[in-house]
Length: 222
View (cartoon, rainbow, N blue to C red):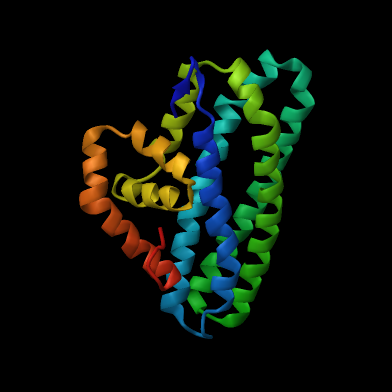
């Protein structure tokens, strides 16, 4: 995450949020469409779900450890708002655990009934997550820009980036670019060092398109 005028560039967190929103929201219908007993397709979707949920977990743990304590101490007038965010994290964590459980069962059986159970849990997760991400963007990020330092915000970004396996970082960059606005894409690409930009053009875009096609059955539209 970068900075503007010596303040954290919080728009990059919105880009990450949009990735989670978009792809978790698509999964209930994808799961429900799996033919009964198709364990290969079920495993593909469950694997993608696991990646998304793992990313979401690390995203939230980073906030729990590096963001909420700072905001609570430097913006005490907003302490109740921070508590609300922490409570939302706890509720989401319970739903994430349920998705992991139901996803594993679905991957093992491929059964339509197990897919229905997973889809229902995912819809509950998406409802809670939509509320939380909206609250965070509307109420928390403006506070972040006022009270967090550039280095503190960068540490939060570095924590999140480090949680992505190296061999998947260009693929996840592709998923972020795909759901970003043109202005957000420019922002993301501007922050990449030249070697990373070259790798994206040479191999990352291709690897992303392959991963996208595996999940959605069609190539990404830009």
